[in-house]
Image (cartoon, rainbow, N blue to C red; front, side):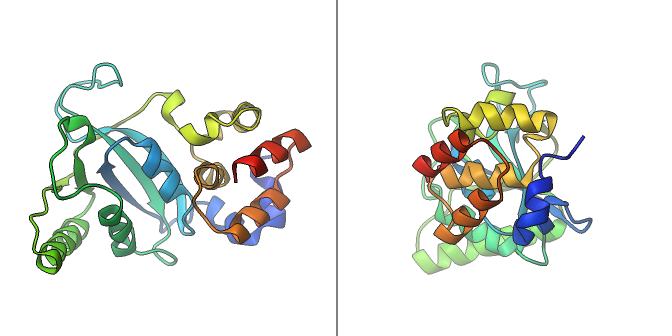
Length: 221
């Protein structure tokens, strides 16, 4: 069976190299409010090779969307440090959530969940720098990731799944690989308005899907 990313591997070198999930890939996890938005924003970034959304930062066993307990909605991503640094990801984190005040619900709090001591120290340094630069108290927290529970399928790549025609076609085509595909992460970001015109043009040119799917994606782009 041909891997669904194969057309891109043949035709779109920039994305293809990322779709192979380089062995040196690192993982980052952030809470930034509702996880649909960060999933799309990070997914459109060159250097990000995988995105997933889930629940973390709490102690309640087996969290789910309707039984979240003390967990937070988070975006977890894998990235190629040769292309994209952890500090650059933190810049996106700080710029795209409300770090000055606490969310009324723990579910939507701002938090960095560090995977290593180095990530923890880098996140704390950028938090301190932000506070010094703005003169404001930074409420978002820096913690160590203990565990993550993946969110239900209907939350994964929500923007793309919500695109008529295209979402169903791509979910069927990718099957179990839908959530982990680099190409799907890109498209999920593009339909949410992220990425450049050139990125979108190349992605559409490389897709081996019916014309109706391309037309619907183009309408969203």
